[in-house]
Length: 145
Image (cartoon, rainbow, N blue to C red; front, side):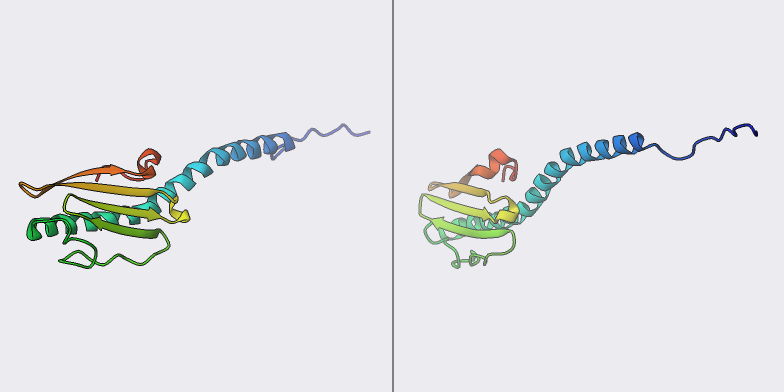
């Protein structure tokens, strides 16, 4: 009888592979929600960009026209409201002599949040003080604009 030849095992055992798969699963469970939130914030940036353009245009309009009611969408240098896109559901401009309210809403792909900029017009020097509200603030989708 020949002696049993001892060989060194090569490769991984089943338990080692199962541990690696479990670790990858845990990491994926943590990373996936963070990635989804990140992509929604990135898509919501289109809403922020659109509303910021209207903020600039309405500010210039108030300075030139001397009142806010002349600064609605599609008038006196203020662009027309954009059509809906994959990330921007709607954008509205409400202009009065006392204030301008810009409201941008994201689509479901962009988190479905709303960004509201309310500009209070100082009639004496025609400056506008902007305040931001909407559920995008609490969600962290929009910064101070």
